[in-house]
Structure formats: structure tokens, C-alpha cells
Image (tube, rainbow, N blue to C red; front, top):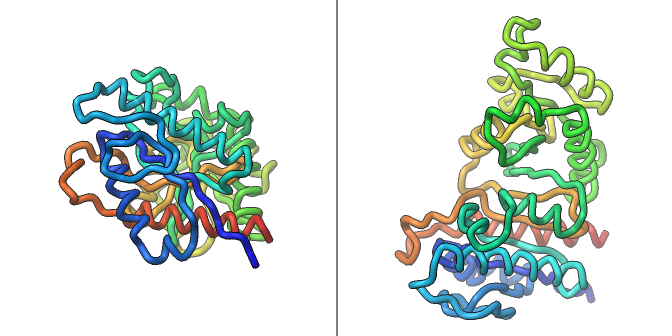
Length: 296
């Protein structure tokens, strides 16, 4: 008999909608049929936990919320590395709170890379589009210096391996999104696409670079399995306009599957029983499918 999939599920920032969407997702029949969750987080959020990190108080500070967020991520990684669980699903965190709580990481992706020592790539995936970021949470003014040949090569390698091994795509078709408008238009709007992105695309077997205003449409029409975007907002805007609420954040390159919903903490509606669990449900189902595929 095939063993059940066990997933560590973190509650995220306890001030936000994480505990609510986890609770609602665990009540979903599809999730119950697919996996056995191990909920990691503090007590006192209204959602039962299997691995308690302490007790949350609604009067606690932002720093305390960030501390619990970071502790949950670290503990979930320990569970995955020990084989207690086969994958991780993380509820949203607040990046400012994470820093205030003592964890100097821009987000989940960077913290997971540091905890595992693995080169990773951040991918948002839906039924119609997959977008991978060559650079993640950095100021826009820092993007041109961060979009290096090595960063693009790493994103291509990790993406190709992840799509092959965890999504069952034997020969992934990758496209590279341009950095400049109209891919620089022959140097009129910048030379990076001609001098940097195009040579790396050829070297790594990617199509492009193609302008941002067309490449995502081409991918949604089935021409490419994933688009590598040079910076955060050009990629995130495309996937969230296309699939907000049904997309899943996947960290490629880890020794175990990790997914999360495609939205943030939504502090403005926390505690009102208004949060939609659809993306969290999808994140759990995708993590399960990745575990099953890895088992062969």
C-alpha cells in the first residue's frame, strides 16, 4: 500500500488570514483525501496545531508575530529534512514582521534557500501560466545589476530540473522575458537584452528574450512551459492578472516540495471569516502531486 503523503503546514503570520485559510483548507474533502497534514505554529490562533511553537496572544507585537512565522518555517524544514514529512506548505508571512522577529530574510524563498543551502527559484504556477523569477525581493533600482548571466543560468537550470522532476515535463520549453521595453528595440531602449540576455538564452536553450507585453500571452497559448522573468513585478503582475486566487507559489530546487498560496497576509480582513482558501487548497494539492511524482 502506498504511504500517505505527509505535509508540514505552517500557519504563517498569526495576525493574518493564515490560520483561517489553513483551517478551511484542512476541512476540504480533496485535501483530506490527498494528504495527512502536520500543522506547525503557535497555539491560540483558533486553528489546531500538531507541532506547537508556544502560545499566541492577540495583543502580541509585530515582532512576536514575525518570530512565530520564522520559527514555523525553520521547524517545517527540520521535519522535511528528517523525513517526518515529505513536503511543506506555508501560509503567508509579513516580511517586515519577519525581520522584526529576528529573521533577516526578504521572504520565504530566501529563507528556505539559506536553511537548505540549495540554489532555488521562485515560481508562480497556474493551469495557464508558469512564471519563474531570476531576481526576487529587491528594489527596482537594484535590478539591472542583479540580472547577471549567472543569475539567469541558475534560474534556467533550476527551472528545467524542477519542471522535469516535479511536474513531469520531460523537455521543458523555457522562454526568457526581456529586461527592457520591446527587448531594447535594437539598443534604442537599452543594450542588456542584446548583450546579456540573448547570449544566455542561447547558451541555456531558452527562447527569447521576448518583450514582456507578448511573452506571457504566448506562454498562456501553450508555446512555452515557463517564462523566466528578470525581476519581481514584471513576472508577478502577469501571473496574478492571469490567475489570481488559483495560482500557487512553488520553490524549485529544494530537496522537498514547497508551495504556498499566491497572496499575502490580508491583515485588513483577518479574523472576519472572509478569507478565500482556494489558493491554499490548491497549494496543498500541488504539493501532494509533487510528492507523488517524486516517488515515481
